Amino acid sequence: MLDLRDPSLYAPAPAGDGAVLLALRDPASGALTFPRSPYGSPALEQVELSGQATLLACITLHQPVLPGVVPPLVVARLQLAEGPVVDGVLDGTAEPPPGTAMRAVLVAEDGALACRFRPVA
Amino acid sequence: MSGLRDLRPVRVVGIGMHRYQFASDTPYITLGLAALRAALEDAGLGWPDIQAAMIGTAGLGMAAGRVMLRHMGDTGIEVMQVENASASGSSAFRMACLLVGSGQRDIVLALGVDKHGTSQRAVDKDGLARLSPSDHSPLVEFALLARMWRDRHGLRPEDMARVAVKNHGNAARNPFAQFRKPRTLEQVLASAPVAGDLTALQCCPRGEGAAAVIVASEAAMARLRLDRRRAIRVLSSTASSEPAVPPGAFPMLEIVRQSGLETLRQAGIGVEALDIVELHDAFSIEEIVYAEALGLCPVGEGAARLRDGAWEIGGRCAVNPSGGLIGMGHPIGPTGIGQVAEIVRQLRGEATGRQQPGARTALAHMIGLGAVAVGHVLQRE
Image (cartoon, rainbow over all chains, first blue to last red; front, side):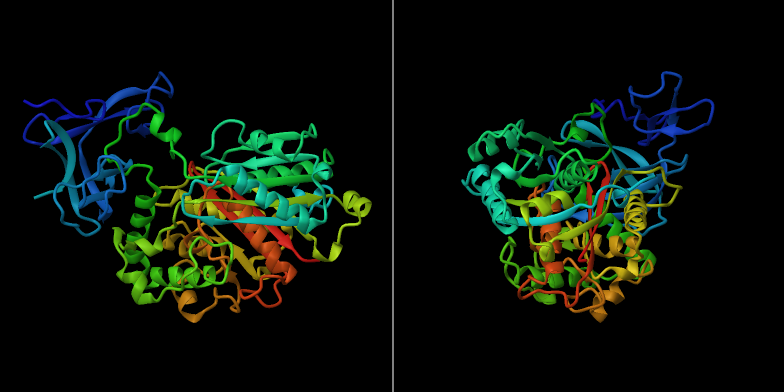
C-alpha cells in the first residue's frame, strides 16, 4: 500500500478506491471548514466528508504554469455534497460538463496515493 | 463613513513614468528615479518640496524606497513602503491622498517601482495542504470563471479575445506600454493556449517599470504657484477586502461590485458619469466581469459592449485606454499608480494618439491577491 501524498487532506474510504475528505465542523452552527486548519477555533470537531461532489466548472492547463503541474492537467471547481466548494484535480484529460456527479478517488502517482476526482460511473 | 470629499481637496499635480518593459539588468533605482524626476518636472516642483513618499512595491525587498530616494538627497521626509499585491501602487496612492487630505502633509509622492522578483506569496506559506496545485492561482481562478461565464451567459472565446485586441491596440499607442504591437482577433485566438480558453495574448506580461504621481493641497498649490489648469482632483479613495458572500456568488466579483459602488458613492457620482475606467485586466475575462460588476453594463452583456465598441477610445466609456495590464503591462508595484498617471494624462487632454474625447471623470480600480480592492475617482474641474 502506497502512502497518502497529503494525509492531512484525505483518507481511504472504507471500501473501494474512494477517498473521504478531512474537514472540521462547528458544532454550534454546523459550518464546515476544508482543509482542516489549526488556526481557527479549538472548539471545531473533526469530521469526514463523503468525497461526493458536483462539478461546477473545469479547464485544462495547457502550460506548466504552476509548480508541479505537468500539462495537460484538468483542474476543477467542485461543490462537495456537504456544501463546501473546493478546487481539485480530475483523473484523466476529459472535461466533463457542469453538473456532472463526481467522486474523490485515490490514484497512484509518483509513488504515492493522490486524491483525484472522477465522474460517478 | 467619511470619504476624501470630506477632507481637504487633494489634486494630482505631477505624473511621471518609466516605460514598462521585460526583465532587464536595469537597477530598480534607475527605473524609479526616472519616473520621479519626470513627475517633479511635470509638476514644476523640486525634490525638497516633497514632504512624504509612499512607495508601492511587491518584489524588491525591505527599504526599497529609502535606498532609492537617498540618491535624491536626504531631506528627512517620511518614507513608507506599501505592499498590497497588485494593488500596492494603488494603496500607496491612497496613502498619499489621505496624508494630504487629512492635513498632515501638503505635497506627497506616490511612486510604484518593481522588478520581476521571486513572486513569493504568503498564501504558499500558510502551512495548509491543498487538493489542487491550482488553488489560489489567479490564472486558474479566471480561466474557471471564463468557463462559468460561457455556461451561464454564452460568453465565447472570441468575446474574451476582443478585450486583448482592444487593449493591445491601445497599448500600441502608449509610449509607456510594455507591448507596442496591435493584434488581430485571429492572432489573439491563435496564440499559445495557456489555461482553458485563455491564450497567451490574453494574459498580462510580468515585467518591470515605474510610475510616479505627486498630490498636493490647495495651500501648497497656491504657495508654489502650481498650474491649476493641469491639476486633477481626486474625488474619492476606497480600500476593502473580500467580503463574505452567499453560496453561489463569486467573491472576487462581489468585492469589485461593492468597492466600485462605494468609490462612486463617495465621489458623489453615478457610473454613467465615467468617461474612462482603468481596471485590473490581468486576464481578458477580468475586464468583462469587472466592467459588469462595476455597472458599466448589466451582467452578461459585457461581450455585446465589446462588439459595439462602447469601451473603445471614442466609445461611451473607454476601458483601459492605457492598454491595461494586458497591453501596458503589470509590473505589480507601479501598476496602480500607472493607472492614475494615465487617467491624469487623459483628463488633461494630453494623451496624444489615444485621447478619450472630452474626458472629464474617470475611475481607477485595482484588485490584489487576497483579495483586496482599491478604487479612486478623479475629475477634471
